[in-house]
Length: 319
Image (cartoon, rainbow, N blue to C red; front, top):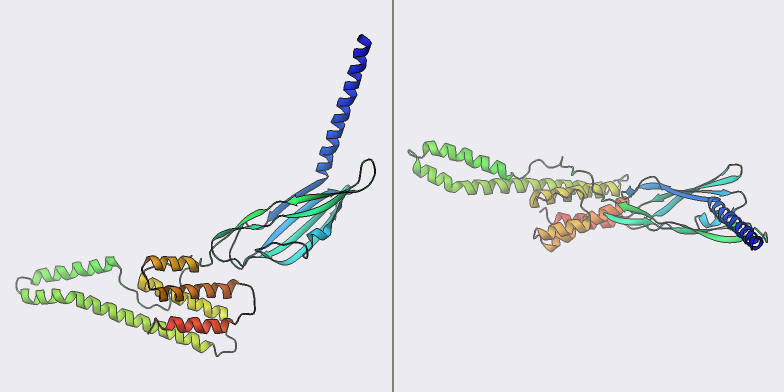
């Protein structure tokens, strides 16, 4: 019995040692391939370019299918691949591959997007048959966020006068009432007549302010139209000026702050204020076309003709 027990214990020890060695070999094989990813920024504006870097460190006996990382075999949609750089570093028993992809973002509006994952192949030498074994590795998806394009404040240098705010109107009323109170006893008829004229004065002042503002708008639009005949005109700059004019118009007449709003968001806000569908569609279209012209890819569209149509549509509201 003792002898049989000794033999059984010996066999069990040998099996345990073999199993431990096998698990250690598997762990070592896993460490023979180390993958890391990083990106230069995790949120982008339309027109931004970012670096997406893959670093792969492998044992020297592992053969990586480098063609899987080439520009012809990778896709980063919705981002556009602009440039790719690949470097290789000898670390003695290991080799480090670095793949640096320069990506451009042409998405518009606040949204969540992803840098897609991808699969690459590599070969490891067989431990017994010495026949290479092909395996695959999944590169995970990387979430990103796109920010709105209208982050700059409205340039209102071309606006000479704004509608009076409610606080200013109240101060005017207080001053008028104080003056009328002193003359009420002796000039009651005159005071009554003047009181009736206050709404007309305010309406007249608003009318003159509105007329002056529209005249300035017409002058700015005519200046943009004249610039189209220049040889060195930049349609992107033209669209930016037209967007700013539309933003100033909406802020002046509807008291809406349009900074940071995309074209769909602007249309929604205008609908909430009960603005006519014609104005809403024209203003939203100007913002959308301006963003696509300034931040979108060069796709051969005739932006000059598009700008002329948008300019003509905006003019109808400034007459």
